[in-house]
Structures are given as C-alpha cells and as structure tokens.
Length: 263
Image (cartoon, rainbow, N blue to C red; front, side, top):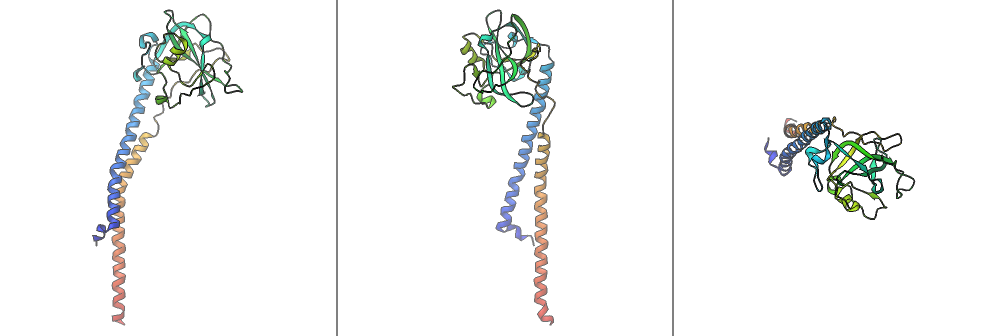
C-alpha cells in the first residue's frame, strides 16, 4: 500500500521536501550568524563608548581608513573651527525621524591638519536647495569630544553621492572629498560631537548608537529550524493519510463488488 510514493506526484513532493530541509537549516544558521554579529557589535559599541577618550590624532591620520574595531571610540580634538568652510550633509534625520541636515565643520589643529566634526542635526528651511539656518560654531580654541566614525561611502552607506548639489551641500561625510574642497590635510574619518553640549538653539547632537536591542534574528533562526523539522513530519502525515484514504477506497470497491453476489 506504500507503492504510491513511487508515483510521479509523490516523487516530486518527496524531492521538494528533501530540498526544503537543508535550505531551511541554512537559513536558520544565516539568521543565527546575524544574531551573533549583532551581539558582538553591541558589545563593541558599549566598550568603545565607555572607553577613556583618546586624542583623535592617535587613532587616525590623513588617508587612514578607520577599522571597525575603532568605530564609536570616544576621542577628543583641540583646535579652531573653520566656519567659512562649513558644509551641511543632506537627507539626514533627527531623533524623531525628521529630515534635515547634519552640520560638518572643519576643526583646524595646531599643526594645520583638520578634523571633520559633525556638530549635529538642524532642520531645513523652506527651500531644500538653500543653505539652511545653521547656528554658528564656537570661536577661539576649543576642545571637543565625540565618537570616531569612518568615512562614508556610497557602497557602505547606501547613499548615492549625487553631483550638481547646491553650494556647500554634500551627500556623504568623507575626509578625502573634504580635503579636496578645503585644500588642507584632513584626518581620516570624522568626529561625531557629544561634548561640549551646544547652546540653546544649536545643532541637535546625534543620539548614541543603539547597543541594547539584539533584533529578531535569533527568533527567526529558531523558526526556520522548526520549519525544517516540520517538513519530514508533514511528509509522514501526508503519506499515512494517503494510505488510509487508499485503503478506505479499496474497501468500498470490494464492498460494491460483493453486493450483487449477495442479492
């Protein structure tokens, strides 16, 4: 009564089930690895945020590519803001997901090198192509503290680096691009300002990166593995149901053949 599993329909169903099981197991491990990556990233963020601030000049240099191990590292820099060459970064959101601009101001160090400082978020004006109202940066020598971030690229951020933008507006925070614009030596990466806090009406500082949430990846992994386990169970259930239906059909056929003889 199990010979029906050799029919074309059941062979196709069995092969499909055999293909689904390893695929679902693989998807489960993919989600599990994403969970592990998220946990490791949270630990890195927390450790770097808690670390004692280090001079930015010790962690980066002109043309330096900031490694992931130094992302969000607490850093300091001392210099003078060059407000004349300040630019704004388009299409950035605040803590309430309102679209505006990030304010990127060069900080000139005592040796003439430049640190890019993201001073925070400001709303846009009525004309999206006009330079927005930006609170002035502090004058004189200042010491700033912030989070070290890597240069933004289109490939890494998913933001298209558009050309033909209005004057003093950019899409990406990139030290090499700003070095060409400024005609100065710029340290790789940039500083995301956390202190000193801006005066009332100043740019809104950027919130700390989320390092508490682990996301749903572990739950998704377990779901995929449960699905993988359910496939053979479902196959067995379908086979047994098909066998039972065939037996019942055979019994009805046998009964119908015996009725005329009895009459």
